[in-house]
Length: 389
Image 1 (cartoon, rainbow, N blue to C red):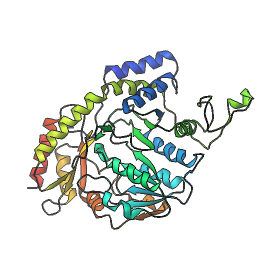
Image 2 (image 1 turned 60 degrees about the horizontal axis):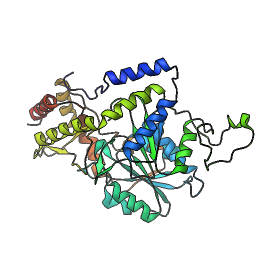
Image 3 (image 1 turned 120 degrees about the horizontal axis):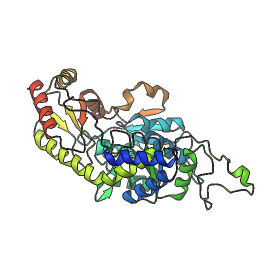
Image 4 (image 1 turned 180 degrees about the vertical axis):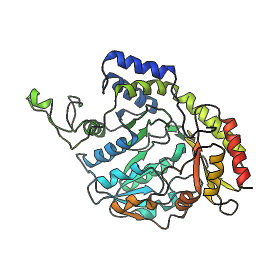
């Protein structure tokens, strides 16, 4: 295929790391996971990191941790403010823990939550704000955290699509009480499948560690405050304190992740060079609405929203891309209220969500990778120019 939607970012270092784990004989969560957590937390400038088997599991453990806090936990019936565009598993854990959702439209230029509508989404039941930086582009995370602090809300930052992006010199994934990352195959660093949760709060850190491993106590330090140990060491080795899961990672994934983390800064710079070329190539073209950079994007992909005044229907455009062997897909997960799953949610849209609906109906993205894509971007421009003339 001429222009793939996703690409392998592994080199010989990651494959050698897999071999090292095989030789060690320790395959499930162990020292490689612990080292990756320490190195990842240090890179992001946070105190703690918890590695799990996916970004979706990171979101699940993050929401669950807020529900099991000793003081002021989230409870069923509380409300969360969420953006209209994100991946499905931003929302699923909220439903699974009995929270209602207030859906706010996005800013069409950034595809992130429209901050002008945030105040109108607040009710007396609001306890949580969920911020999502879409496809590498930082949301207004500083304003969101200030809003959450001002109104006594928890702030959960879903940073699964935006690893290594920055806002005012600060990494995305450092603004939330809890922040989550994905290390899926196509993401900024890849462990095949995987994710991380980061926080500066020790209680939330310990809760997440317990939740990822069956809700038991084995993975908790002696000085934890989330439970009191008994004298019976035999029982303590298999003591369960939370209704948890098994969402642990493997040593293979962590070993590969450590190698990827060493390359992250260089891979982000390569993505940004492609981003800059893409922006220059399509600059001033009224046919396409491009994602405007807010802060410093780590450029997961290149988004285009077809302006209905100047372009044919999306199926016509996508057929042209297919003929040109260019991969494409919907922007993240599209507008959440358009999905069948919402029949299972307690969810209310704040207004008609015109921007999210336009992106859902007329938008798509093509891939960005950590190597030069100049020929592919040129081919994309030629294919779009031919069908949208």
